[in-house]
Length: 193
Image (cartoon, rainbow, N blue to C red; front, side, top):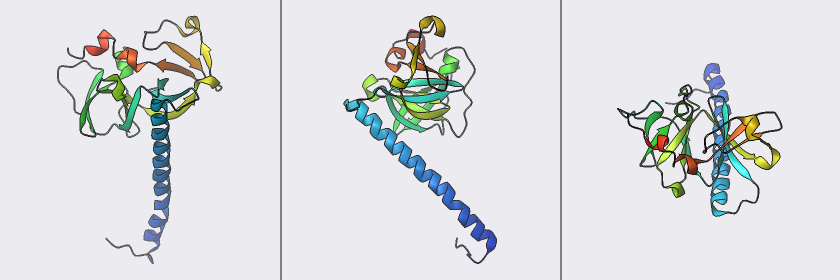
């Protein structure tokens, strides 16, 4: 299809396209930087105490970069019959079937709404557990050295896979999520009804 540049409507549409192209370029650059930093962390090259910040529903989590794998769009998920409600289904990530879990629902909370902004954060291959978390938003890298650790009494009783909580400079509460501990939780391993 050819575009008539003398047409003002076509010209208007063409001029609005670069904005979306710029956003896509910025998103690709962000993703490339994030992948580069995650790979550096997995190699042990990282000197700062950086964590991957994610949001699931309205809750903020921090993941060790060594435990987080690939981040992909939630896209098409295939449901699996006779599984628990928190087991969202399967996703094909680069030819590998990956189990996708809704963490808030696993904890007894509300289902995470599945929309165009949702991502799947796959578990790192080092964990030898082919799974991923459905997340509402990937917030990028966070330095926990800039945060204040919250005492267990202030944070309340948490499962072993949520060992610590932090408060950032803006007052947001972050839950440190240990995927290595989560994959050892017997309830998490029992997806069948």
